[in-house]
Amino acid sequence: MARKANTSGKMSYYMKKKLERLAVENQEPEIVETEDEIRAKLTERFSALNLISQQTVNGKNKALIVSGPAGVGKSHNVLQAAREFEKRGGKVGVIKGFCRPTGLYRALYDHSAQNDVLIFDDADSAFGDPVSLNLLKAACELSENRRISWMAETKMLTDEGDRLPRTFEYSGNIVFSIVTLSKNQHLLNLIAQIYHN
Image 1 (cartoon, helix red, strand yellow):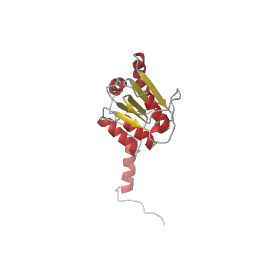
Image 2 (cartoon, rainbow, N blue to C red):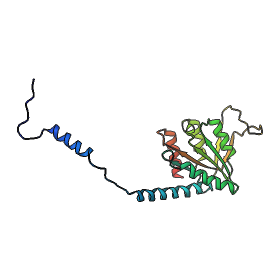
Image 3 (cartoon, rainbow, N blue to C red):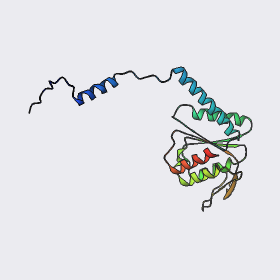
Protein backbone atom coordinates (compact mmCIF):
# COMPACT_ATOMS: atom_id res chain seq x y z
CA MET A 1 0.00 0.00 0.00
CA ALA A 2 1.54 3.30 -1.05
CA ARG A 3 1.45 6.38 1.18
CA LYS A 4 -0.13 9.53 -0.05
CA ALA A 5 2.13 12.54 -0.22
CA ASN A 6 1.22 15.49 1.99
CA THR A 7 0.30 18.18 -0.54
CA SER A 8 -1.56 20.46 1.85
CA GLY A 9 1.57 22.46 2.62
CA LYS A 10 1.19 21.66 6.32
CA MET A 11 3.98 19.89 8.18
CA SER A 12 3.09 16.68 10.00
CA TYR A 13 3.33 16.48 13.78
CA TYR A 14 6.17 13.93 13.58
CA MET A 15 8.12 16.04 11.11
CA LYS A 16 7.83 19.09 13.42
CA LYS A 17 9.11 17.07 16.39
CA LYS A 18 12.01 15.70 14.34
CA LEU A 19 13.02 19.20 13.23
CA GLU A 20 12.77 20.51 16.81
CA ARG A 21 15.02 17.66 18.01
CA LEU A 22 17.57 18.40 15.28
CA ALA A 23 17.55 22.09 16.15
CA VAL A 24 18.21 21.31 19.84
CA GLU A 25 21.00 18.85 18.98
CA ASN A 26 22.76 21.39 16.78
CA GLN A 27 22.68 24.21 19.33
CA GLU A 28 25.85 25.01 21.20
CA PRO A 29 25.51 24.49 24.94
CA GLU A 30 24.94 27.62 26.95
CA ILE A 31 27.92 28.40 29.19
CA VAL A 32 26.65 28.92 32.69
CA GLU A 33 29.98 29.70 34.39
CA THR A 34 33.34 30.89 33.10
CA GLU A 35 36.52 28.97 33.89
CA ASP A 36 37.56 31.71 36.33
CA GLU A 37 34.21 31.43 38.13
CA ILE A 38 34.57 27.64 38.35
CA ARG A 39 38.17 27.97 39.59
CA ALA A 40 37.10 30.52 42.22
CA LYS A 41 34.28 28.25 43.41
CA LEU A 42 36.64 25.24 43.69
CA THR A 43 39.23 27.32 45.55
CA GLU A 44 36.57 28.47 48.00
CA ARG A 45 35.31 24.93 48.57
CA PHE A 46 38.80 23.50 49.12
CA SER A 47 39.64 26.34 51.50
CA ALA A 48 36.54 25.41 53.49
CA LEU A 49 37.54 21.71 53.36
CA ASN A 50 41.02 22.58 54.63
CA LEU A 51 39.60 24.60 57.51
CA ILE A 52 37.05 21.95 58.51
CA SER A 53 39.67 19.18 58.19
CA GLN A 54 42.06 21.08 60.47
CA GLN A 55 39.30 21.73 62.99
CA THR A 56 38.30 18.05 63.07
CA VAL A 57 41.88 16.81 63.28
CA ASN A 58 42.54 19.31 66.08
CA GLY A 59 39.51 18.14 68.07
CA LYS A 60 36.99 20.93 67.48
CA ASN A 61 34.66 18.54 65.61
CA LYS A 62 34.14 14.93 66.62
CA ALA A 63 33.59 13.70 63.08
CA LEU A 64 33.72 14.82 59.47
CA ILE A 65 32.48 13.22 56.25
CA VAL A 66 34.12 14.38 53.03
CA SER A 67 32.39 13.05 49.93
CA GLY A 68 33.06 13.72 46.27
CA PRO A 69 34.34 12.28 43.01
CA ALA A 70 37.55 10.27 42.98
CA GLY A 71 40.73 12.21 42.30
CA VAL A 72 39.62 15.71 43.33
CA GLY A 73 41.84 15.93 46.42
CA LYS A 74 39.56 14.99 49.32
CA SER A 75 42.01 12.60 50.95
CA HIS A 76 45.04 14.73 50.10
CA ASN A 77 43.70 17.71 52.05
CA VAL A 78 42.57 15.62 55.02
CA LEU A 79 45.88 13.72 55.20
CA GLN A 80 47.85 16.96 54.92
CA ALA A 81 46.01 18.34 57.96
CA ALA A 82 46.68 15.02 59.76
CA ARG A 83 50.43 15.18 58.99
CA GLU A 84 50.61 18.70 60.44
CA PHE A 85 48.73 17.46 63.51
CA GLU A 86 51.20 14.57 63.93
CA LYS A 87 54.14 17.00 63.80
CA ARG A 88 52.61 18.74 66.83
CA GLY A 89 52.40 15.45 68.76
CA GLY A 90 48.95 14.18 67.77
CA LYS A 91 48.30 10.51 67.04
CA VAL A 92 46.80 9.66 63.62
CA GLY A 93 45.59 6.35 62.26
CA VAL A 94 44.52 5.74 58.67
CA ILE A 95 42.26 2.92 57.58
CA LYS A 96 42.37 2.36 53.84
CA GLY A 97 40.79 -0.64 52.19
CA PHE A 98 39.01 -3.51 53.93
CA CYS A 99 38.11 -3.40 57.62
CA ARG A 100 36.17 -6.01 59.64
CA PRO A 101 34.22 -5.00 62.77
CA THR A 102 36.90 -6.54 65.03
CA GLY A 103 39.62 -4.52 63.26
CA LEU A 104 37.49 -1.40 63.56
CA TYR A 105 36.95 -1.96 67.29
CA ARG A 106 40.69 -2.30 67.79
CA ALA A 107 41.46 0.78 65.65
CA LEU A 108 38.95 2.83 67.65
CA TYR A 109 40.52 1.56 70.90
CA ASP A 110 44.06 2.34 69.66
CA HIS A 111 42.96 5.90 68.73
CA SER A 112 40.59 6.63 71.59
CA ALA A 113 42.52 9.36 73.42
CA GLN A 114 41.70 13.08 73.32
CA ASN A 115 44.43 13.92 70.75
CA ASP A 116 43.85 10.94 68.47
CA VAL A 117 42.40 11.01 64.96
CA LEU A 118 41.21 8.06 62.91
CA ILE A 119 40.86 8.63 59.16
CA PHE A 120 38.82 6.32 56.92
CA ASP A 121 40.16 6.82 53.41
CA ASP A 122 37.90 4.94 50.97
CA ALA A 123 37.36 2.19 53.55
CA ASP A 124 33.80 1.62 52.38
CA SER A 125 33.66 -1.92 53.78
CA ALA A 126 33.03 -0.40 57.23
CA PHE A 127 29.80 1.14 55.91
CA GLY A 128 28.43 -2.13 54.56
CA ASP A 129 28.41 -3.91 57.89
CA PRO A 130 25.76 -3.10 60.54
CA VAL A 131 28.13 -4.00 63.43
CA SER A 132 30.80 -1.62 62.10
CA LEU A 133 28.23 1.11 61.60
CA ASN A 134 27.00 0.74 65.17
CA LEU A 135 30.58 1.06 66.43
CA LEU A 136 31.03 4.19 64.29
CA LYS A 137 27.75 5.67 65.53
CA ALA A 138 28.94 5.19 69.11
CA ALA A 139 32.24 6.90 68.27
CA CYS A 140 30.45 9.85 66.61
CA GLU A 141 27.88 10.47 69.36
CA LEU A 142 27.18 13.99 70.55
CA SER A 143 27.52 13.13 74.25
CA GLU A 144 30.63 13.99 76.28
CA ASN A 145 31.19 10.35 77.26
CA ARG A 146 31.27 8.22 74.15
CA ARG A 147 31.37 4.62 75.30
CA ILE A 148 32.11 1.87 72.78
CA SER A 149 31.39 -1.75 73.63
CA TRP A 150 32.08 -5.17 72.12
CA MET A 151 29.92 -7.77 73.84
CA ALA A 152 30.59 -10.77 71.63
CA GLU A 153 32.62 -13.83 72.50
CA THR A 154 35.65 -12.72 70.51
CA LYS A 155 39.14 -12.62 71.94
CA MET A 156 40.86 -9.46 70.66
CA LEU A 157 44.41 -8.65 71.72
CA THR A 158 46.61 -5.56 71.76
CA ASP A 159 50.05 -5.59 70.12
CA GLU A 160 51.48 -6.52 73.54
CA GLY A 161 49.19 -9.55 73.80
CA ASP A 162 46.82 -8.07 76.38
CA ARG A 163 43.12 -8.61 75.93
CA LEU A 164 41.19 -5.56 74.68
CA PRO A 165 38.56 -4.34 77.13
CA ARG A 166 34.92 -5.08 76.32
CA THR A 167 34.09 -1.38 76.84
CA PHE A 168 36.13 1.81 76.63
CA GLU A 169 35.65 5.58 76.51
CA TYR A 170 36.26 7.12 73.11
CA SER A 171 37.56 10.71 73.05
CA GLY A 172 39.17 10.72 69.60
CA ASN A 173 38.01 12.26 66.33
CA ILE A 174 37.06 10.61 63.05
CA VAL A 175 37.29 11.72 59.41
CA PHE A 176 35.60 9.81 56.59
CA SER A 177 36.78 10.43 53.02
CA ILE A 178 34.41 8.61 50.68
CA VAL A 179 33.60 8.73 46.98
CA THR A 180 29.85 8.17 47.10
CA LEU A 181 27.18 8.38 49.70
CA SER A 182 25.53 4.98 49.74
CA LYS A 183 21.80 4.29 49.92
CA ASN A 184 22.62 2.17 53.00
CA GLN A 185 20.19 3.30 55.71
CA HIS A 186 22.72 2.69 58.50
CA LEU A 187 25.25 4.97 56.77
CA LEU A 188 22.59 7.62 56.20
CA ASN A 189 21.78 7.45 59.94
CA LEU A 190 25.47 7.90 60.75
CA ILE A 191 25.65 10.89 58.41
CA ALA A 192 22.57 12.42 60.02
CA GLN A 193 24.10 11.90 63.47
CA ILE A 194 27.37 13.57 62.45
CA TYR A 195 25.56 16.41 60.71
CA HIS A 196 23.48 17.18 63.78
CA ASN A 197 26.54 17.12 66.07
